[in-house]
Image (spheres, rainbow, N blue to C red):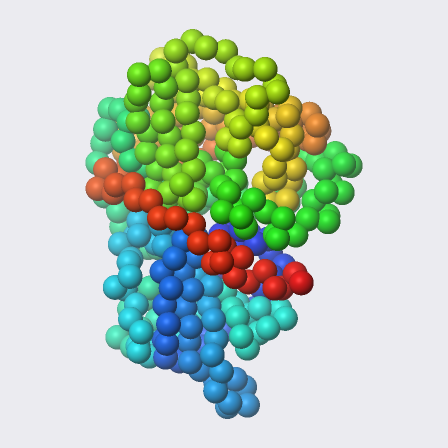
Length: 321
């Protein structure tokens, strides 16, 4: 069975766990931490020699799983279960990355967004201003090409020595757009007096798209999510963003020349929102990066906010010590 965990690639890189190896482990759940940005499960099981071991399993974000109807009650301490995992490279008997849990009654609880298979209802709307969820495929389609982005020599050297310990998300700082726009969890657009407010449940990220005709400030004024100007072209919201702080996306650096143009257009009779972007950064990229994604309309879900737990965000970084 093969299942790509894009959340691992996004948060840790792909070196921490042996993603090419998957195994099923039987045991009893002894602890469940339903925390942000990760769920942590502890499984009492046995190693190959039959000795008892306590296996800690890192799962995805609870904010991702709740769009499929899974919550704290989906798993209970004391249950006998089977976990599908990829082992840690250095500590295979102690830590693993989890894909799904099969319960004693045969029901399956996914531990990553890609495992959510429940059909969703997406009623139509005639307005951008509602709640939306990016599809898991849209996020995957962003993460996979990161390895092949057109980097110049300086950017390639920075990425080569990058480890997830240096990631902003390891400090509970959300990655910048466009990546933050594509996490498959609840997002919302709200119309304000002079701007449109975008909010994501991923680490509480927010963006302001100014719609009052103002220009971008001097480049000396820089922001983690940049400075965004929004305008309407017919029924399409076009957002132009500059003035980003220096940061990284999956190990790819960006600087003061980063420039992002995004387009949001209702699709599928108002049941979906089409998203397209063009990203330029002459300091590090030799060509523009383009992509697209899709949100599904989810008015049944409301934004919730939970503080990012720094200890959970860094829980498995001893792989890089």
